[in-house]
Length: 332
Image (cartoon, rainbow, N blue to C red; front, side):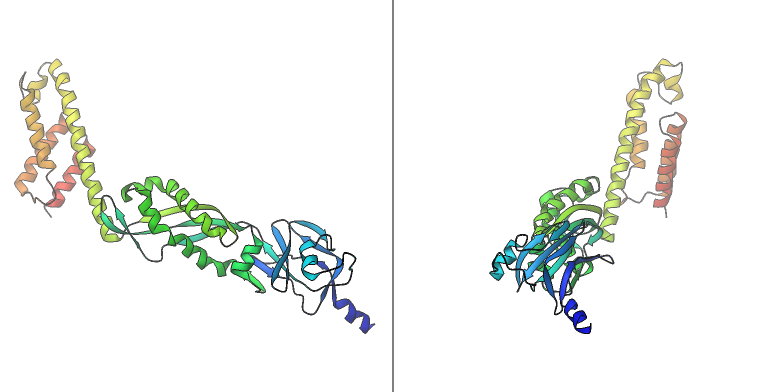
């Protein structure tokens, strides 16, 4: 009885992988000193592939399903072993299972800032990060390039290599895109697609398919971000000035139609140019560059002029309050 048990242990008639746990990409079936019975059953589950390796040489690959192992279903292995078509004895071979499930929510990012040339800021150092997803499609290439004869190979072991592969081409991609940094936030989807296409051939070298890639954030160093904030503020002030000038231009005809309209605004009929000068002077005082430090008298005079425009409906209260806060801040 003990002899029969010993003999039974030497032969395998069922090969399968239950894929317990998460994150294993490749797993070698534990052969030890056992041999595979001719006619044995190979079960490959959905999202798996199985591959036979004979003395280091890749042989037959099987997709999902239940397979009966014979010389007919193992043509490459049969050729490598020089089997006769009627050979029915047990045989030795390494069997590897591979997971083809999509590996979701993988993180990528720049561990250090990368230097690029920007159209508006010149040389700048950027950081970027996001997520990506991939799955294994070519077990032969993955075995030859990555996992080898390891008993198991996990997703975590591959993570660093894939992340560095993505970041490696990032600097060139930033330059090739020609998109100024200030516009990148509005073009992150397009930038992610360009990065995806650039990285797909790199993943294919490892037998992997890069399914998706998302750019979640692109950022500048803190000191350069302050410069950008100032630039945005200056642009907003310029927009406010143009908007106010437009309101003034539209208000003159309406005031001229009303009895005492222009007089109430401090100008007589036909004095539109003079009124425009009053507004222009008030706005000029309000829009002085940050480098010019106004005196307290100048600030008070400017606020009085702007407040008068609020009373006439030319400036909104919110616009006046914003400019008041800005001018008072300049006084320290």
